Image 1 (tube, rainbow, N blue to C red):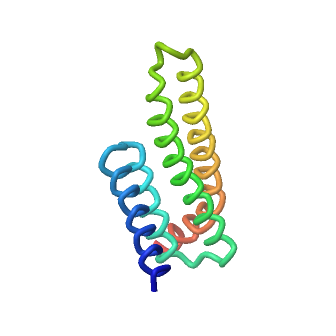
Image 2: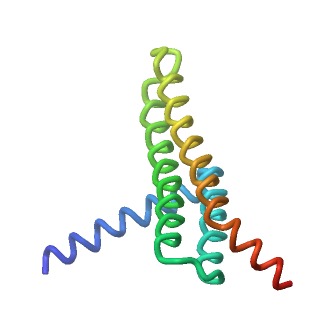
Image 3: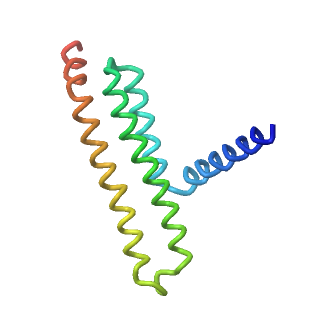
Length: 124
């Protein structure tokens, strides 16, 4: 039963991290809102299984990269930008990775959802 307590403790730390990111990171809150829209569309629209999977993976990739970005920013802040010229570069590179993931996720979303939106508007 010790392993179960340790597992519960690990999940507790993970939930704390999610709450921390949600409370302190505006970008993460916006991305959670977008993820909720995607989940709502997954419930309401008749996507095929592979389309659902693709949308979920793209959404998860953005959220995970944003968490990594937040973590790297906090870590690099320990070095103080004025002490190391690479700190800004590291932060910018992480932000670029989130931006790219977000742009590609949006493109995937448009490619997958667009045909269904056309059908929905024809019905209305």
